Image (cartoon, rainbow, N blue to C red; front, top):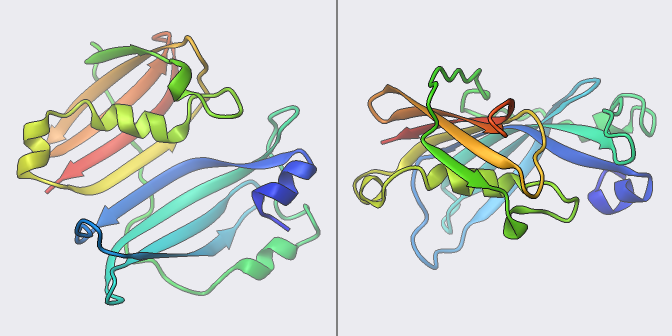
Length: 202
């Protein structure tokens, strides 16, 4: 199969490359919601997986698009998805559309960092890398509480480029592209780009 448990037995794992999320309505506190997911396409090195968020009444209130790669855990090299287990993975493709735009190219031109953090123990995942969710949390912390009190995030994107580790210094660069639209880039030790993000408030 292609689940993490069975893949890990063969020294493979999934890594998230790109993510785009759009929220139409925020679920209320304690409201139950459901997330459905499906594979849209499979290519040699990447696969597209989409998501829809349904509120407790079954109304679609959010969507996400993601791009994943599979790597060998020993040498960190990408796997050929079309050859692994034959072409079995193509059987998971579902002919279902996702109404939001695919993840876009994110350009950041800022030259002075707005924040510098050191990757600490709670940033690290079981593989010893900074967890992908921690990047998102650090990015969201760049914005003041007052902005979240007056607006909400309409669209959020992440593009993961490289890995960072415990002790790395993370430099955050931020551009306001237009009102309520921000592009962010994180570099480790102020050299190599780790990830880029787009945050649009409404």
